[in-house]
Length: 258
Ligand code: BTN
Image (spheres, rainbow, N blue to C red):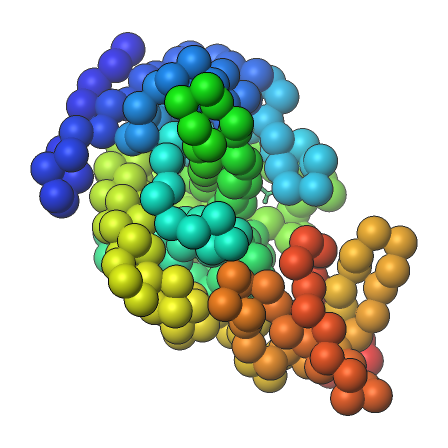
């Protein structure tokens, strides 16, 4: 089923809905390769092979989450493309706040947390298409915890657990409106710097957070000290050396874990 909504600057966004897909990101990537326009959004009621960051899977049973992927064709410098998932996290954060009064945190790079548990995951992938490079932004929002596997119960949460009766349609339109508003701002002349500032205003992980970084086989502890212009995380280690982290897992180290 397809329908259209209008985003703030009057560009029409198309939504394609599926009962079941292996992965909305895979479907969107295929369509981007075949020339689909910016603004196409793929939504599935369930995913049978949902993809997460760092080659993980994203458990996506019917009725338990909102699973969507949006095709973007950014016209920003390539070096700022890593800001796209951070921009998406800001957008989801704001949509949850504005529409449902749910106040969330953002764990670098793009996990949206409620009460320190993950409520939304974001997977941005780039696609080299004959019509030019595209980005596919996949968003998975936990609506309820009915099907959480046991291993997720300690680390994940849901819109329902945040005290809101989940309304997937309202969530979808609110998230899309917010994504395209922030995507527009990313294209402003100072868009990249604005995005970093807005991200850091919403993320407790930007500055002064003691974290453990898991980078491949390596792991180290440090304190965050801001972001690079492309969104990479600056971390000061105990010996005062600075590490710039681009792709890693991050864990908050609480005082009792030190
Ligand atoms: C993460 O590991 O935190 C990212 C999870 C991203 C999941 C979403 S659900 C919709 C889209 N389709 C996928 O296969 N993955 C993303």
